[in-house]
Every structure is written in C-alpha cells, then in structure tokens.
Length: 362
Image 1 (cartoon, rainbow, N blue to C red):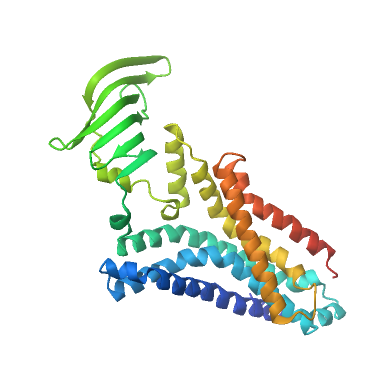
Image 2: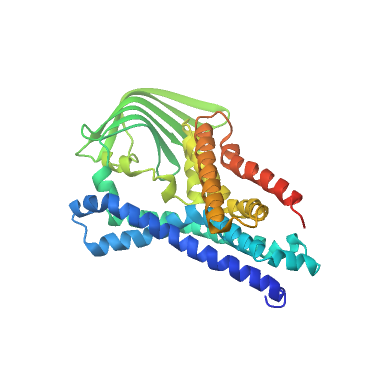
C-alpha cells in the first residue's frame, strides 16, 4: 500500500479516516443514548437486567452504524477537504502540478472501501437484530392477536397465503396453500379453502369448503372439491404464523429474495420488500456517491469554517434521508418500480455531484 500511495495520498487518507471513524462511532452512540432515554422504563418493566439491556444495545450498533455510514462519509469528506482548502493545501498542491482530482483521489478510494465494509455489515445486521430482539423479548410483548393479508413460507417448497388469522380463536379465513412440485411423483398443487380451524388434538389445521388442484405436469390438472380436509404438513400453530415472516431488517439479502419469490408465487404484493432489498445495496453505494457530491461542495468557500461544514453536512443528510423516505413510499405504492425507487436518490445526488466535480477548478 505504501508503494501505491504517495506521502500526500497517505496524508489525505489519514485525515479522511480520522473524521470518518469518529463520526461513524459517534452517531450510533448518540442514537443509543436517545433510545435509552426513551425506552429504559419499558425495558425495566419487562424485568430485563442492566446487563441484558447493555448487551441488546451492543447488538444494535451494527444496524445503527449501517444507516449512518453515508452521513459519516459526507462529514469526513466535507471536513477534510474543507480543512485542506482553508489551509491552502489544495492551492499548494495545484502549484506543484497536482490537480484537485488527483489530490482527493485517496478520499474516493476510502469511500469505496467504506462501501465494501457497508455491504459486509449489511449481511451481519440481520443476525445482530434477531439476537437483540430475543434479548429484549420483542416478540413476546408486541405479538399481535390478528394478522391480515400475509404470506408464510413453510418447508418443502410450500407457501401459505392467508387473508385473516385470529390467534385467539385459532381460526383462518381465506386460505391458499401452494406447493411447487418436481413432476408426476411429486406434483404441484394448490389448495384453496374459505376457512381453516386449528385442531388442538391432532395438532394440525383442518381446511373447510374449498378446492384442491393437482398439477402433475403442464398438460394435466385435476380438480377436487372438498367439504373438509386435513393437510398433514400444515402443522404450524397459530402463534407460529405470527412470528414469520421476519422483518426485512432481520433477513439477509438472499433470505429476503427467497421470501419475495415465495410471496409473489402466492399472489401477494412484494413491492415494499423489493424496495427494502434494493436499499440493502443502494445505501452502501451511497458512500461513493456522497463522496463525489461532497468533495467539490467543500471547496465552495474558504472562510466558512467548522460551522459551515456542519451546516452543509447536516442539510445534505436531511435532504438525502427525506428523499429516500419519499421515493421509498412511492416505490412501495407501486407508482414506480421498486428498484428505481431505491436507487433514485443515488442517481439524483450522483448527477449533481458529477456536475459539481466537473465544474471545480483543478
């Protein structure tokens, strides 16, 4: 690395990393302090020990850090480049024949490294979030008695599409079971029933008043109407159906992709989950986009000082987060494709950053 980077490169990169690490660790700690203030009584009412509460917040650090990494990169870029500008270090570099692009290249290299780190962190976050929810007993205290219009991905390639589930009555209204087969010996079938009731003796569901369609291959289909039928593989208890699916924050990219595919097979609306899946890639890439945007912006004034840098960083972060929430809602509503909704903020800020970078005096 020393052979690849000149002394000036190492100096620029060191200044960038100092601010980045401070910000990336400081923001999550600030969020944790705010959350402790708001929720400490709730956790104590759940009879959680101080050690459990502290451990839950330790598991929460990856999630909070994942969301603030783009803002941390922006702060690091604005303050480091702004410092170089105020102390005439960029002017001295230009006088030595080093262009602005070449001087800030190590910063872009650092932002690319942060992007790779954020992608890896995004795969760790679901594991730590699930562990945190176990510690603070989130499911126990927030479990709902009813669920509406959801899909449940079971084993053996089976998907349950349920209109209404009432846990207290152990009752389902509007049930569809889809099993994807592999041929005549293990055919695909679709079971649709108006209602289903949990049998506490047999520990399985009995479906009533429906139709069973068996599809051995692409040329044949067998339809059977039934008054009642047991599905021997439908053994998930009513309470089990309320714990699955997990939230997008508790699923890795591949797990979320499998669930989206299962939801679409059963006819469910997966736009919201598709946006969340796309954001798992879009947010890490934001680190590079925000560096391209922030570097020329930090040179726009030489006398603003720290207050100017903080103002620019906070304003940009707020606008960016607002844009993400707006496009996220639009994508979830199906107005625009989910992938475009997730990537649109990056496209907008990337275009503005490229324009500013092209117009900066080199």
